[in-house]
Length: 244
Image 1 (tube, one colour):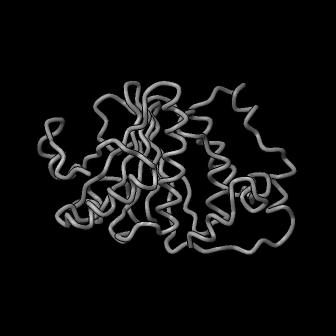
Image 2 (cartoon, helix red, strand yellow):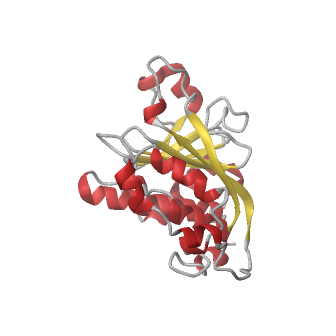
Image 3 (cartoon, rainbow, N blue to C red):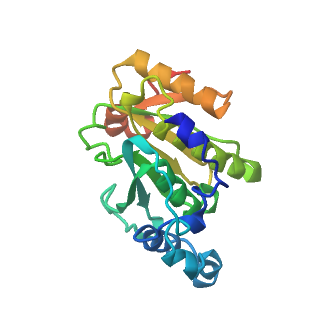
């Protein structure tokens, strides 16, 4: 699977946004962009109408199925209300199951560095919601990495996010069955990316994922693993369970 992902670089014909079948993909992501762009900015993001109706370049493209289907979720900071229940503003955007559809979506969606402050953008295995209450997540936790701050960090955030996505959907982790998904969180003080896993008590599996993720990101700083149950019970005073 990883060979298929890396054999279709972002600039290839199969990965080109102009060759994507945009129904309902195009409409979904225009809606997503509209949440964070003004009308004037949105017009500059439009894909030519010829590509909207043309499918994947008008020709047949061999598709490469992924091991698991994955769903993008978006948490809109503009849609949140005071005292709103956590997770109430999260919505599923689109589910993809092939390498080609991944690149189609990726090339049409905003990079994390362009998203508004307070945004959470998730990519989880289909059937798993990015919430503590989901049965696949309730006994798990998350690894979190933060890129450097400032302008340089914004570029690193985009790279970290792409490499994390490719590693997850390309089944690069030895303990891939433990992975639920990942989320990029855009914040004023410090952006961050987290990988959510299923079984917090399985230390060996979590440490393996953490170490591999650092290698994938070429990240030298220490990262921590926070157990969801600890976060629920202790809130901001919760401490990481593992470190790598």
